[in-house]
Amino acid sequence: LRIPRELDLSSALNQPSGFTVFRDGIEVPPESRPLHRAAQGETVPEVVLEVRFDNGDRRMLLTRAAPLRSRTGELQGAVAAAADVTERLRYEDHLKLLLNELNHRVKNTLAIVQSIATLTLKDVGPDARAAFEERLLNLSAVHNLLTDENWNSTSLASVARTSLRAARERVSF
Image: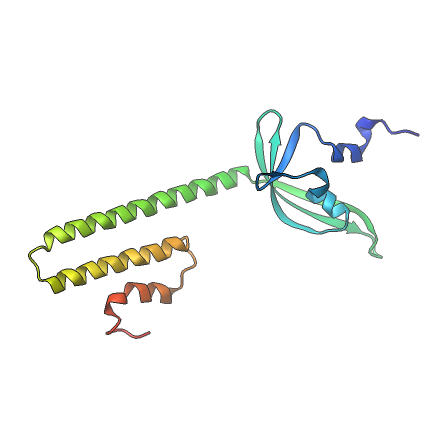
C-alpha cells in the first residue's frame, strides 16, 4: 500500500510550503523546529519563532514542544503548542519606544532647568550655585540609574545613595 504524497504527514512536516520559519533572523530548517525536536525526545521550552508567509504576512509565535512517552518511557510521538504573540510584541516595542522618548525628554528638561538655574543664580554666591547644580546632577544621575534598569529593578539603596551623593558627609547608609 502506497500513501499518496499529499496525505504523507512526514513529507508535509519536512517540506512545508507557503511559509518560512525564522528565529532571531536566521532560517530554522524543519528538523530544528520545536515539534521535530520533541519528536526526537527533546523537551523544547518557550521559543519565539517568526513565520514569514509567501504572501508577505509575518507572524510571531511563542512555541513549546514536548515528547510523548509511554508508561515505560518509550518515545511515542510529540506535542507542540503555539500562540500568536505578534500583537503583544508590537505593543511591547511601542512601549519601549515611548519610554525611550520620555527618557530623552526628561534629560532635555533637566538640561533646560540647569540652564535656567545658571542664569537665575548668576548673582548668588558660588557655594549656593554649586550646591544647587550638584542636586540637579544627582537628580539626573537617579534618572539615569532608573532608565538603565528600565524603571523596574533598581534597588532603593542605589537610588538613595545616588540621590544623596551631595550630602554624603551628613548621611550614612
